[in-house]
Image (cartoon, rainbow, N blue to C red; front, side):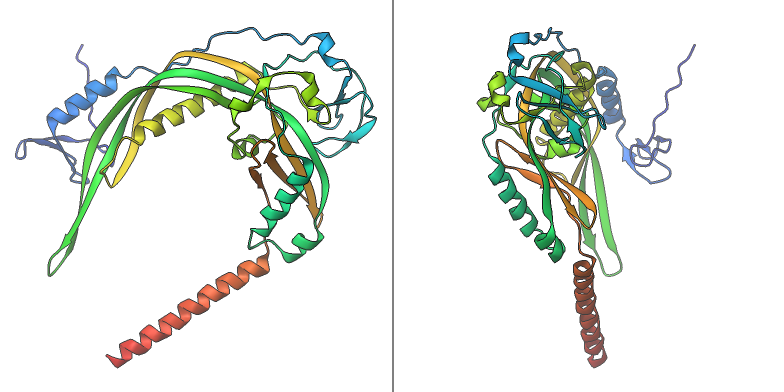
Length: 361
């Protein structure tokens, strides 16, 4: 049985056909022309690209030795289920995730021992100062927020992360354009030439982090990256003393899709960086093959700060190793209004000046 093969215009997705007069393929809708040989080679490359393949080596995690939790207690928030680690003398505290008070009871048990931990390098006072500096740098924060906001809670938390290592082979096809413009006495012309660009290469990734705590917003955790893994040490419970900690509740298998996504995007971006000399470059298709992959489990230091303004809660996070700070802030409508009013006034004055100059001509 004969197989039907349809060619579509890469620019407008309309069917294209061979035009004998020009000996090329042509789109009847946008008038784009395509070299027949180029389309054939393009099909061969695209058809040869295998599907994405991500296979990770299974590695049994080390069970936590009961002797490791001596002197530590695990406390469970009955509101959100967040798990908190404190010392044996802690009696009551607030949940760092939902800010609700919790009664502390129970033993640290049933958690898997992390492979590594990055100890806190920055203390609570530095976190408080970073919040002040962060607020002062923002122009549209209400003045009352600067003077009246108060810090409800500040906690140093060891957040669980899955770290992924992998070698990959990747190939990406791009649609690249070159735009040229010219004019004559009657018209302005713009010409856009399209090119098929292919790149392939091998690369390695190490310690790609994926947040293993569902209570922590992923975007918040990724915003305070990177962490410097060269300062990681073998895990010891002593590093947790004086801080909170949470075991992972997003296991490795559930974290792999996010790791795959980050690897794929990074591989495409790396190959994209090798394409230059064009007006625009857009990835059209890609294939990423994971050669070997492995994972480990680590705890990373994060300062979580909560503050209140006019009844609303605002959450901030600081990398406890590097000091990178991020969070959401209120915006002053009055300051925004003044900005737009100034812009409108400037535009109005400019329009009046142009109008007067036109009247003089």
